[in-house]
Length: 417
Image (cartoon, rainbow, N blue to C red):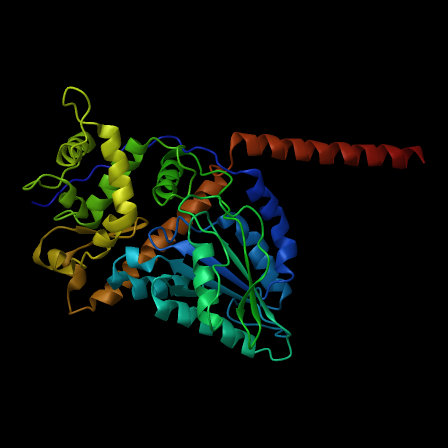
């Protein structure tokens, strides 16, 4: 039985989590970029749009312009005396369906021609080798440079340290120690690392950086959903969200990805069908797993914790194995909802498949529409200042008042002369 109506769940107000080490790195970034040849930005494949940190964009665009890229043509470089490349790696590729990788890469390339995109997983040596060769080839384009310096950026818990350890093992022959400590919890890396050698000839070095969260996740439904998504991938410090709220949103997303046979059915008693009721679902999980309190009452909180952890591990792999359901639209009269990762959702109608259109082409077009909607929402939030907290507004007002007073004082001093 397929779900025909999947309501959006109520979500909590997002918390603010922007520790001091994130602010310090944010302030350091412009000066760090003067010593950087390649920015390697990691994002999570499950949240390929939400894990973009827009607060870094200004510094990155300025870096490109200072290195000679044409401000009117992102693909043209006026001055090319040293390397200046931005590579975006969507990490944990094994946690999203394979059928969407290439359409999404092409969709992003069409919208952001100034960036190179690739998917990777540290568990796939071929991906690590491809990335290592890409960095080495960039270094070889500038034989007069003594070394290539790579700065690794990204939100918390997107796998920066783990991927760098894999790159080191791939690029340096022989036994190499684990260079960076890693953790499943966000915030382990709190300062810029020492340089890590990734290649001997040519010389390629990398810096690991602290994961930087958005200073403010936003107001309204958009901000609430953004926060829950990041909490689900453990990008926000554990304990800042009620786990049952995370479980409710996770149930909703898994239903969107596969309303016929969602991956969570294996957690329920035999013969269960897809559900949109979070209490009914958690009760089923609790009874199946023997999570009961005194008196035989199902422990819904324990079930919610188990559900989220299951998804972060084997459940994510299971949901990534879902097939593209193009045939569902072709055989029906109405629109069929599709999803890829937790950021992209679209509908396909039977008439859109007329004329033997290639499914991959149609998927790419749908993904481009999703990206356009995402960018339009960000623009609207910025114009309405929904991405600025009350605290940030107060700080900005205080700075403006300070500037005003300095200007007034300077004017008075000038008049006295």
